[in-house]
Image 1 (tube, rainbow, N blue to C red):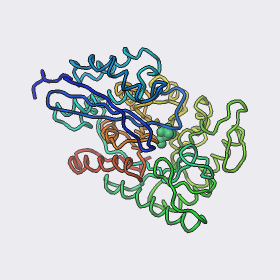
Image 2: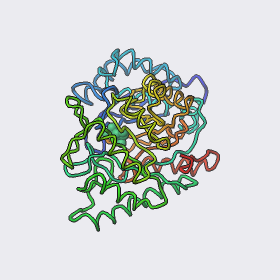
Image 3: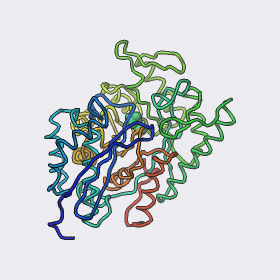
Image 4: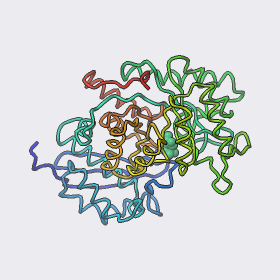
Length: 415
Ligand code: 2PG
Ligand code: MG
């Protein structure tokens, strides 16, 4: 295809549903006879500094804004000019956090532009992203949520949001994906035996949501993982934090912990269960708490999600304070692929582990897998069970089947 045909000739957006049955947006960009689509996920435990997902009136308001203000302006742009497309989104929006057009619409347009550009260049999307970022591609290790609580599950489930596993020895994508699925399955059997009346109920991300406390949950996950996987947590501590009283509220145990008690509780879990990954251990404003935790546990990948919200300036601050060893990259937190790539490049420069992540409300869109490979992510956090989670694993498998060992596999035992 000739270079001249690299222009968007038509564009549209509409409302579809995510895995929670909530409305979200999907975007279609066209260049001649080539079409691309991308849809946006939505988070539930959102950082206060992330892009606002939708304008006040919801997904349909984003679509209305798209048709009125964006559609005509996208036509004629080169989809391979990611910065050009993303600058247009920022200009039309004009707010700090995409509250006028919605961060989810911005993300869907931005991602769709990358997908269309790759199609026009006749290369896989992951390669286009790798070229855009200048980062060497790699197959990420799947970091899988197998048991969940917090804001992703109902009353009675653990307070910690996610109990995560990642394979230690998988030498390729198929082995890695299978290892997590088997742990999830084993965990289901363990819980069925141990937790009276548990019928296999799951939370928003397909992780089991049994009516047990955090430590009972962790014990079961550790047992299911055996020596095949490391275990980690996403505490999502901002969701537990009562800022007025400076306490962490554990509903399941009906207790409140001061920061010190919360620190000690997490420390006990790290030591007792050999945790290797802890995401958002403290409230999103507590950079010092993160740094203290990093110092206390030099082997643990302390990861910033709500702390950093995929923003390069917050990543810089966290890195300079020694507050993180890993960072979550969720493109719809920041709204554009350009900004996500910028955060990834900064993380690579500073030796911070990149964890490319889904949201709790997902669609079956598989762009995330390309993003993880193209940004050389150490991990992809995309869940284990449920169609919208498996969509990401399956795309990773497809990339592996078509590219094989030309792309290196990240290794769990090097964490
Ligand atoms: C998280 C995510 C995804 P949410 O906290 O890491 O697992 O949850 O999408 O609800 O923010
Ligand atoms: Mg998180």
